[in-house]
Length: 304
Image (cartoon, rainbow, N blue to C red):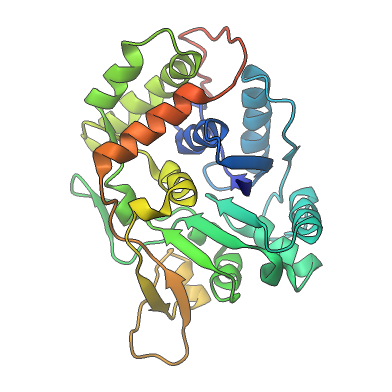
């Protein structure tokens, strides 16, 4: 069983904000091979106050009372936080055993390094959702990178740390499309509480994204990184020589130079080998998530 800390910018249920962190959390809760030992919040999709308060609300709705939920830093001006201290404490208690899954700004991880310069040597691995290797185009529109770019210095510090790092970029996440077929699967099964919860919390985002990008669904960004942790064999392996500077990472750009001797090795998978299996694994994990009894109305999505 893998010990995992999930560092996220969860905005599932906030109007006009992505639902992917929340979907990833429900996936982690439904995997018997993952021990979720903590959730830390960071800014990215929204402010730390929005993210943390929303995640507290989600924990309450899902009756999660056995997993620590720790608030992270509010900005790059003060990176050390309760979340960064929690990260340090956990890896010191279990060196080389903990996987950090980070799906927002990497400020908390940088804060942990500031508190303990040996932090990265004690982590088993770091799995990230973020970064682009070329423009990210959706239905002819450019989508900006919003994770590494939120704190470029923190991103550079993590990527160049020497830790075992895997990045699931925005490009591979385009293979994790959540369209009408997937949403109807939620709509047509009211017997599974997690399905009902996801349907109620994600329908407004589903419509919002379709209108914004003239698409037929949304992309399940963060869950790609969560699935990688539990089933890495579902992805290809591509170790690249990354030479991105802090300035490059201000736009989330992962600059690759196969000939450079001044680079850092990062695993950047490009392919989900079997997308149908990928989706089945996700729905099965959601089905198995133990979340207690829920009473969530269809109109519960918050509008700020």
